[in-house]
Structures are given as structure tokens and as C-alpha cells.
Figure 1 (cartoon, rainbow, N blue to C red):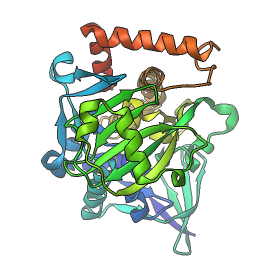
Figure 2 (cartoon, rainbow, N blue to C red):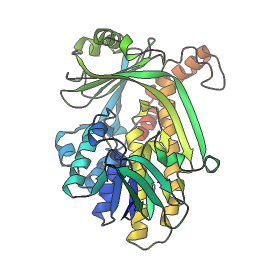
Figure 3 (cartoon, one colour):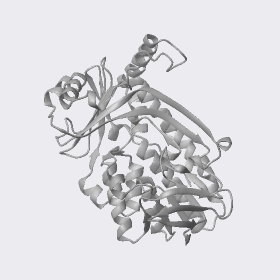
Length: 404
């Protein structure tokens, strides 16, 4: 067994692990990243593309914002199409100047990978048999295999950035964690196409046929979603069927302007709300999807992971740079305060904009017709009043990060 050492072991080379590693390295805090799949596989994941201001600022602080600032699109607002009638949520006006940035998660990951490679930071891709040891002791460690060699990484702390199915959360004994989950009775069928976006800003659509979202990755690449039953398969949806159904769910003006073309990626994603408490045990910290999942309706997944990174990074700097012993033990409390706010907003948006059909258990076991009427009234209120739109806007641009 070959022994290596680092102050921080980061499990997972997705955007949260890479961002944490980059920020720590900028402060002279050495770290090693261990990833179970290849770098190409990581870059092949198609994910979100709306960045809150907090994440934009973090990427700038990490020194990886040059391409984002040049190619990203600042969005001052977005639209909610309510049974064909569009309402624009003016983020800039309603939040006193705040905006979001449209820049794909894949591109964020690519920028972070390039910066890490350029700086010679250590990353082990395609690792196997990753295991965490002695996480409640003063000397935790990680073992893994790489190219037939077994390594033991001795470290001060472990950041579990390895997603919902990773090893990190499972390393916390079941009796020491509590999990909260809501699995939704539908999924999102998404396609990526080399076509210009149907609008300059995102359009969230509530229709009698189900939810739809018109999103984008760039001025020439579009991302669209349809609410579909969980029983549907990708093979059931030809490109033509997808475009036809999307036109039914978009407001008429947008449907008329829609440019269609061959899909370059197509998949169905189930929706769930999930939180693990606490988000740390001993020297192990759970970051991003390892600790929580949000339905994508509120564009919070990557952004919520970024706030975890910001909190953990700030606390580790307190320990290593400011000699504040045990500062990191505040991580779970600080992170969860923001996690539950984002979970609630994403759940709320999902309730208002989706068709739950025969799922009568969504709210207090009320029947579907009653629930649908309540959600219609809810959306009526928030869209028809500036105060209501402001509530949506302030959460969409992202609540402030906790003070460290």
C-alpha cells in the first residue's frame, strides 16, 4: 500500500469538489481529489445551466471565470407561462439589481478541470474501492485503488462531494443520520439541441397537458424539458413527438417561433426532494448531492452545492489561516439553514407548476382536484401582485450565504 498525505481529501470531481479544491488551493491549503469515473465521463454529464450570483462570485474568486464572463449570458428575468399567458418575473427590478447567469454546468466543470490541471493539483480519476476510515478520529484516511496500486490518503478532513450514490454519505452510520425524502410522481424528459433558444430568457410553462421548460445553454444551443409519467421511456419519444408536444405547452407566440432540429442528447430524470441530517460527522463533511437533492424546477441543484462549498471553504480557512480551532464543526448547522430554504422553494415551485394528476397525497392527502385548485389560486396570487413576484424573484436569484 502506498501512503500519501494531504490536508483535505475531496471525494468526487464534479463541480462542487473541483470548486472546493480550487478555492482551497488558492489559499495554500493542499488537497487531493479522488473520483471513481473518468474525466471524460464527468464532462459528459448534462446538467443545469443557471448560476446564482453567489456561484458566479465564487467562480471569480477561484480564478476560473474568464470564459464564463466572456460567453455566459446574464439574465435579468424569466417568464412563467400560466395556461398560455406569460408573466415576466423581472429579477433585476424586483431584487434591486440582482441577476442570474446562463452558463452550462458542463462548462463550469471544464473550466475548473483545466485550472486544476494547469496548477498541477492532484486528481485521481477512475479510482475504485474508495473507502473512508476513522472519520470520527483525529486522523481520518481514505483508501482507494488506482491502476492496480492501493493508496492510503492520510488527511485532516474529508469533503464528500461524490453525489447521491457516492460512498461518503453511506460512511455515516445509519443510526447517526436522518434522511428526509419526497419522490415525485413524474419525471422530466429533456433534450439538448443545436438550435437557437426560443426566447432570450427561460420560460416555465404550466399547462393542462403538464409542465414544460424552455431553457438554453448558449445562443446556439437549447435545452427543453417536458413533464412525463415515470413509466415513459426515452425510446417512446421521437424527436418529432417531443417537438410537437413542446409546441402544445409553450405560449403561442413562442411555439410559432420555435426552431426545431435533431436532439444531441435525450434523457428522462426522476424528481425528488432529499436531505440528510446532519451534513457532517467528525472530520467528514457532505457537500452538494451527497447531502441533498432538489427537484430542478427552481434551478437550485448546482447553486445549493455551491453554497455548501462557500460555507465549508470559509470555515476551513478560519481553521488553517486564522487558527480558529474547531470552526468547521459549525458546517452542518450553517449549511442546513440554507438547504431547507432551497428545498422548500423548489418543492413549492414544483407544486405550483406541475400536474400531479392522480397523485392525491401531495398535500395533506387532499384529492387531486382540490389540490389543483389550491395551486391555481396560489399561482394566481403570486403572479398577479408585485409583492408575490418579489417573493419568487428573491429566492430565484438566491438567498444570501450564511455569515462565516
